[in-house]
Image (cartoon, rainbow, N blue to C red; front, side, top):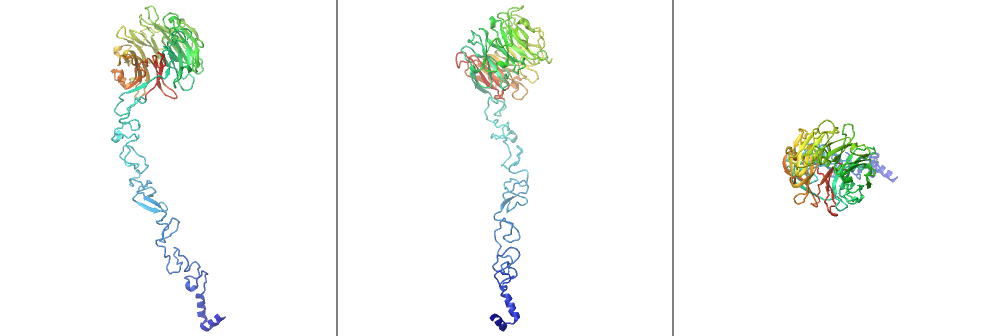
Length: 625
């Protein structure tokens, strides 16, 4: 009442109301009208924090003052009130100028932003921001002089062996293989490869020793051997080998072991075929042929040329009976038994299964009697042909064909081998060897009783009456599409090519002579083409050298095709046995396929004495690629 009285006394009503308005806090923000810049808005007062919004919240007369220099952060607001949101944020990401759009920028062109700006990249590692094909991780094109991946230079060493490729001015002859570079070691395992880039392999000597050891003194395990087939379907080929002089079954009874070719084993765990009488020389010959009974296992045949006073015999067995360890005592389960009737003619000294002999799918068994005496005189020799599917006892009268030698002392039938179609008539052919004079004839398939030598496709003769050689067809060493022939003899091996071009050849017609010095060449095994040049390689062996040493080697198709004369010890790939006097190489065979080891060689050493006198051994040797 006093205020009203005083107001009435001191002011007029208009002044009173004005002062009352000025002293009143209309918006309730704690400031009267006269101290508030907008007493109708409680969000504007001297105590209100200034915002960057174009409004003077703190009533100091300045709009958006106090924000300059504030740190900008990536929060979607304009902290420094410069009109730009999130510019130069303190918590932003560093971006690098990427003019070429390859996702990699230059380290020297930098900005900081919350979001990736146009023409900028997260990585500042580009080596050329004017070329979108050049950036770290780019696809490098070798040898083009361009550093596509920004590694500091062009890719000149693709295989990473430390040697630049020839295409890049270096001296690496194969930049796709890290095992091939200048100064690399030549090895047996890849012996057909020029590891050190000198233009060829300079010679590798691979040493090997026994894998399977014979069990009996003087038995000479490894005297004969051969590849069979996968008899039990486990992906591993079996092979056979004989201790030809095995004394356990009577004097020189012999026997045959059937073994898996993939791993060494004690022979006591192997399957064994044993003879019924002494002096059988069981295992002097053997081969594998078609499955006659249809049980899925190929059938096999083994010969014993000393059986029954040298009359000789051969037994055809179901391969399934040999796949498992155990003893097969002859004649026992033999499906057929071929027997000779002439004493000391030595039937089955050699034998061979001739597949699809007449083009009707049927196989023929050829057995030889090299010491047969006929109208021409002693040791005229002959061979007989029998139906592979025949059963029971089969004497000479059961033969479906055959032929005799045509001069005394020829020992025709010293060897027999199946051959592919040599003469191009669509039938598989075969070859039969002599001991002296003539060396070999290649005979046509389908002809049951050929005339010798008239029906021979090819006949090879020696140059002297005492000359002899063991001949065999090898692969196509000259890439003419036809098999070639090697004849092993004392002192060396003769290689013949184009054997169908003329029907009569002498040793002087050979295309190549492998000089073995005083040693006797024993084996010439076709390895097929190992180095991809369409020419077959051949493994050759020699025993009984001047110092009793033995040696083997691989004759490349390229070297064989050059012709002339080469020394055995000059072959680039040599196989040298330990011990040297074990006669390793007396026999050899090629196993073409095995699930664990691929292709490899089996080499017989009948004089190996690691476990006893002349117990013999067989070695396994990998085949170079």
